[in-house]
Length: 108
Image (cartoon, rainbow, N blue to C red; front, side, top):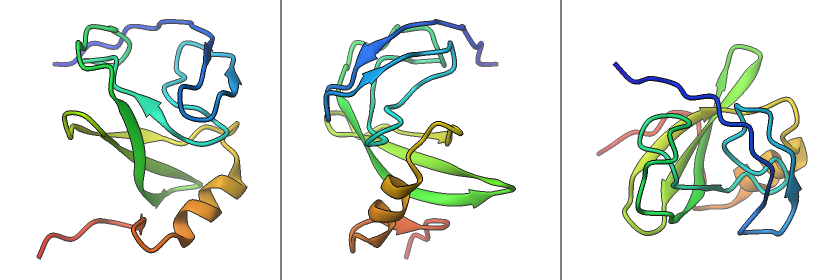
């Protein structure tokens, strides 16, 4: 079973440069939605990869959204609930891109 480690950290987004004030559950930039591959289990900061994680898909989940990120270095994919602080305009703009998947992914 995966353990969650609450790690409160502020950071500068390595993708867009935004200053992000973490709350212990923050795993991506609320401005551009990019993340960084720093955890093996949520919050442990044990990954040696450190690659940037591109938001590759988003799906509706109840009243919110789930964002799937893919590491640009190792290809690992992680799903994360969107935060109330996430920029809805960024979610909308990303969903318009032809290589972005809105909804569940299907493998042919």
